[in-house]
Length: 423
Image (tube, helix red, strand yellow):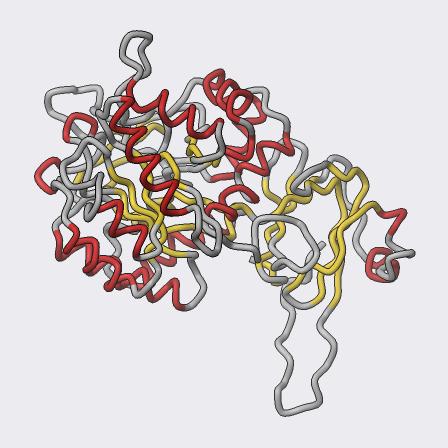
């Protein structure tokens, strides 16, 4: 399978060639399923991907011959990339006050195949947001996370979901600048509502985000179609010349948005149309809880796989038992794997408060919904890596970082490798 540990070279001695190994199985590349294939790794890089029969001609025959023959039905997937993740393993990024707490959530998802993620914050008071951003920036500096996603506080009160209404704000460019500074360049995306004052238009929050290199994401909104279209046009135009190339996103499409209605289309129609034109990528929490499986399948078929990103919206309960948890300032109860805000006015629970699945579980649910395996994996790896402008992860392609996930036919994780090392 994958060596448990590849020792680093001793810089005091003559440099040695990197350790080379191969992982065999049915390999899921960005574009195809390679039956009876292999991925060859040297050090922390992928050096070859292809069918076994081509290995000798490619000069990697020895590595492939030495690889353990996998059990029937073994898949080799790329390391998954999650753009929207609030925590797991009992730890929450919005609540973490130490590196160890935050890393507990990172490692929970990494051990289940998510080798790249954005750590997501939730709406909170100014001081807390800046403090958490600084803590998470340390992890990004060390390469443990790919950056930070701020969900709020410029969200519509009517569609706040699990966000604390006491801390929702109109657009505040000064707060954006403070958050960018506290993140030390690691703020990658921010969820904003186009119907909130101060978000759209010249000099607004969306403008400030793009200027700072941050991708705005439409979400938690009660916007009209026209308001959403205006923000999409503004941001898509501003991002058109960005390097590396980036695209606007829609935060967990359908959830916490004015519903699509045939006489009141709202933001969903604007997002779907923009996605179909290639101007926007929609997030789908395809975990079987947030969306009907038919909705997931239909959106992928309608806008195309390259305009869809599968996300978890995970919170602390991911990988944990039912019980009581926190999501920022909100109390959350998890029953039968479904997280809901504790609401005295609704004994059965209030709004859904994030997910409890790992990204590989979302991929499995999406495949069960009728989306082909290659497409589902692409939406959980290649496409989100592209949204972030990352050309080093997200696919089993020669030259990219050696992030691999070995699963059985039911997409149950058997082994994870990140940068050529076992997780």
